[in-house]
Image (cartoon, rainbow, N blue to C red):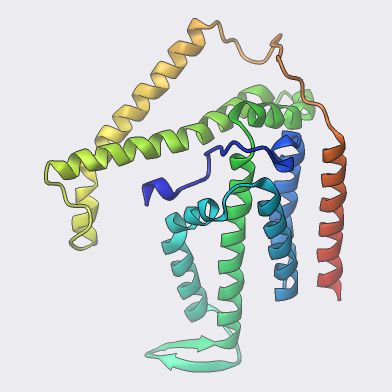
Amino acid sequence: MIRDITIGQYYPANSYIHKLDPRMKLLGTFIFIISLFISNNFYGYLVSFLFLAIVINISKVPLRFMLKGLKAIFIIIILTVVLNVFFTPGKNVLFYIGSLKVTEEGIYFAAFMAIRLIFLIIGSSILTLTTSPIQLTDGIEYSLNPLKKIRVPAHEIAMMMTIALRFIPILLEETDKIMKAQMARGADFDTGGIVKRAKSLIPLLVPLFISAFRRADDLALAMEARCYRGGEGRTRMKQLRYSKYDGVAFGVLVIYLVGLVVIKIL
C-alpha cells in the first residue's frame, strides 16, 4: 500500500506531455480540476474521462502505474460513497436499512463524488509524473511571479511546494523500510481492532518523524553549504520557453472547457 502512492513521483519518458512547458501543465491541471466541479451530469464526466484517457495515452505513462495510486485512497472513496448514499437527502426513497434510508439522489451524488475523487487523483498524478522536480519548481515560480508586486515570496513558496512533493516518495520508502524492520522484530500492523492498530503505529511513527527531521536538517545544511540565499539574483541553465506544442495544448484546453460549459448549459 505504501508503494502505491504515485503523487510526487516522476516517470521519465519521451512524450509530448513531458515536452510541454511546466507552466502549461500547471494551467492544464488547474483547468481540469475546475472542469470537474463545473460538470453536473454524466455527459460532462464522460467528456472528462475521454480527455483524461487521451492525455494518459499521449504521456506514455503506463495506465497500471497510475491506477495503483488509487489503492492508497480506496478507503477514502468507499467512506465518501457510503456517507453520501445514506446521508444525502432526497425524495425518491429506494429502501431502508434500519433507520437509514437510501435515496436515488444519494446514489446519484455518491457516484459523482467517487468519479470526481478518482479523476482528481489521476489528473494530479499526471502533473508530477510528467514533470521533473526542477521543472516543477521553475513553473510554479514563474506562475507566481506577478504576485511579487504585493511582496509574495514566489521563489520560496515554489521551493517549499517542490520539496514537499519530492519528499513524498522518499518518506514512503522510509516508512516501508521501518515497517519491514519492525515486522521482522515481531510487530503486527494488520490484526486487532482500531485501538490496537493505532497503538501498533507508535513504533512506526516515532522513527519516521526522527528520520524526517534528520533529512530536513541535512537538506538545510546542504543548501547553506551551497550559499543558497533565495531567488534573488539566481540564474538558470535552462530557461522556460513556450513552444508550438504549448500553443496546441492551450487550444485543446480551451475547446475542452468550452465543451463542458456548453454541456452544462444544455
